[in-house]
Length: 544
Image 1 (cartoon, one colour):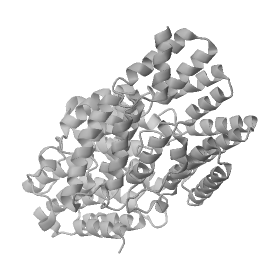
Image 2 (cartoon, rainbow, N blue to C red):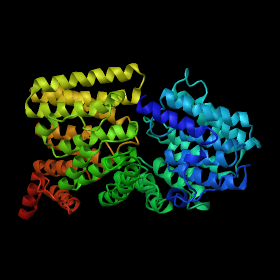
Image 3 (cartoon, helix red, strand yellow):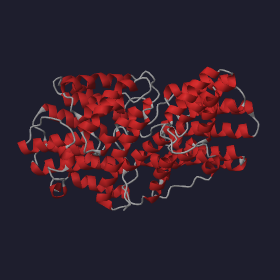
Image 4 (cartoon, rainbow, N blue to C red):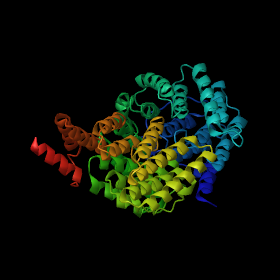
């Protein structure tokens, strides 16, 4: 039996009444320090108390602990239909990735149990039927269709019970989950935020409100509005690793690198400790890897390369973990790629090896694409055209595989990488018009999509690569436009700040160059590596 099947089986067992023997004790840290939620149900008083704790944990996406708590509710009150609703909700990860067929079957089982138990109120039946809309016909309907069906069902619950704050909170999450990654008006996110801000005024310690506000504001034009939630969430649910990590989504969007490092160090220690307690000293879980990717990204922006190398080295020591998830797969592929590409170590990028973890990235072709993209860039920049062509062909095959699976978002992400790598190969071969056309096309395609919540950002922003290409072609004014466009979306990125400084210097705008070099010096105040770029910045500033 595969690890994925084993996990699905464990959830199925959790849905069964009688799971209580393996449920988490009421006084565990997740129960005590996961935030304050009151979700009234018609079950026994003891079941109500545990149910509130379970919902609080669910709101922080700690699904494994949530399943245990909801199963304990069912054990406490076998007639409690909402306990089964909770198990079904814990089997679906709305902002992460579509469930597997096994997980869908597992999640549909508690829905059937909940409906068979016949909840005592119309409100509870509406909640149960709403999650039932997601699992209904899962073997024939696509994920997007079922997610939208759940969102519409939750909208009706929200409208039908205006005094039920939980209906608003779960509806807001559904809006975030169904937001199109190509919608630059952020209509769903703004609507969700408006609902959540109202609840936040009434329940400032609600974990779901803070959590989902961060997700709602996790985009360049909205990020500033997410700072209050980002700076409160970890205090609301200090026992939950994901709650310690989530503030860094906003910190990353705003280039607040030290705050991101602090948040992810705390989250990483909590997540790694949780995994080690279950599986041993070389264990990891998805949150462990997710926090490591954010740490890697933040360290590299401040030229803390020795710290970043420690993250890479730690990744190589990890062995035992749960079934691979989308955030974990992204992190496994992205961490070593970032370390090579952010430092522009092209030889290292060209030789990038598959991760040492016992994971199968082939189930996430776009993750393998990150490695192929890094190798292609490294090979093209190192003058190995044949190796670059091989990796570009791999990217094309991965794109086609994802397209065939109707995974449009990730197919497009891989296509961005294919075009960018092909542009660098064309540049290496002296085909400059083709190189610029390909890189501009890649940058335009990337700009049409939002980043996935699983990542702090692309391993290299394509518009930044376009700036690099234009600088190589002695077009500094055009390069400046691309660097500044990158910085508008990704503030305080080391490579774009340095690129803008160089572009200004080559354009003869020494005042602007000085401003950017000073920004680079401030950005790298805690640098632990003497990067060549920093030496150039210091030399320029010393002459002015």
